[in-house]
Length: 267
Length: 248
Image 1 (tube, each protein chain N blue to C red):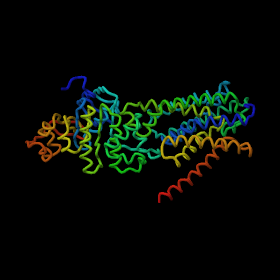
Image 2: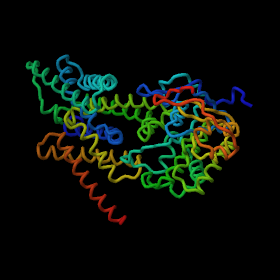
Image 3: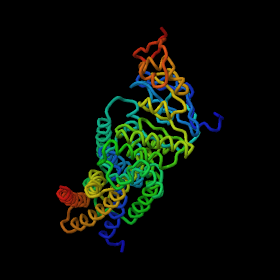
Image 4: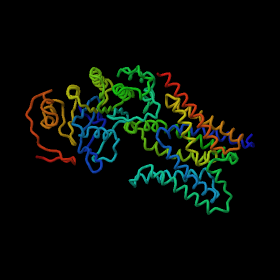
């Protein structure tokens, strides 16, 4: 069954969608979409290092993205620059350094388009293991830090005052962000990972009345996007990442129609 | 009365500064089980800051804080909730602790907002939201309650009822309460200990003692002191803009 590249891609995509669903909700709630972009841009550097040292890609991306996240936290403490300027600085400089390193690696055959936009042909059985085991670990850790993370997302001082240690939860969440980028880079591609995090969650926000519902709808939206996207990618011979994100955009537009209806009902 | 094991939180000459300016300095106070300690003082006198020091929200402080309980309920003065979150009253009640349905319903009934249980938090009025905040803080049956202007925006009859409720909670749960209030009438009738702040502790003691105190009268005016007593008034220090205190 795993012999068919399409089945592998489907299983990988489903695994990714289950994890990006809940993480994406926190990205929206905590306004971290640009932070996600920065981490995923830095992933290129991780990929090039993996190639040049013959290292596992997911692991190397995880390490580099975590380092970038830590660098960001240090820079925030030590400079007076605003957060978005620091994010832009790290995003573009790590992307640039990654591309320069690629230039030096001319002896390796490189599918840069596949890296940027995802390549379903590239998903191996090994990748499936990384996605599903890594994904299960991410969800487990998220479940453990859910209460302090969610409480501090609603109100930091309440969480701190009532003894929930929100700072630790925030640091762990940053690591989880690096991890989800590492395991989904092959599927979605590094330019579009943030889209996979925020578009299904944004769709879910339009149609949900409680945080739990938003997480569930976000997962369902992600799953539908992956299935729709991959089938159209196979049908029209398009790159997997853009096809999945376009499918999630389609679902988002549908959810807007739902909002209009409910506003009409209220009036 | 004030035996050591009854102390819930104790501030020793605590102070907090931001951008080289003292928000509050040299505050010593303690909250014990079953007692209500009230902070009074004009705007900007450091009441909320003192509460946040006691709660451990501010960490880089002068002096020290000893906190002997982790069961804390907090009603902040200002709360900014981001409405990108779909959050109902029911979800908000279990924010920091998982509670069974009975505890949630009981607390919401006590503050008179049980009918709002499934409403979106963003759709509540200011007074309704304040009642929900208070319900959330008492629902977990805390040992220490910190209430920062808990009845702001609540209608007049509701205000009296909520203060009675706070007094009742303190008796029933035997919890200590650190209360910040502008309402001197309430403060003076229901409080065990009053701390009058103005960047530092101006005076403190039982409500009767404080009402007699000169500095209290200097801060709140002659009329406020007539709530409990009449007394002459003399000012022995002034406050500079840096939060320093100069003796006359």
